[in-house]
Image (tube, rainbow, N blue to C red):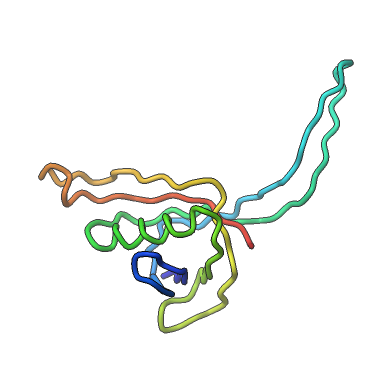
Length: 130
């Protein structure tokens, strides 16, 4: 289980959510600019490098799906949150302050054949240390 603690607008305060993750993979984030001269030579300035995480949840539905969407919508604007990769709501391990990089995606993974109401969805997003 993975625990995230964030400030929820809809709940009006701090919320800790246990995420069931399918994968949490390391991702390198590089903040750089590159300029090319008229002659063709490139100059690259690297401002910072950080190892982040690419997170993919397990298939979720119903209220769990809505809770994850609330979490992702809350952090999408750059708000920091606590990410505890090996912890849970009642058993913290080593939380780290993180921010989202880019946006998130939501993918239907298991249609249930009832018009989409009870389908399972998987979320994917990238994060790095704040």
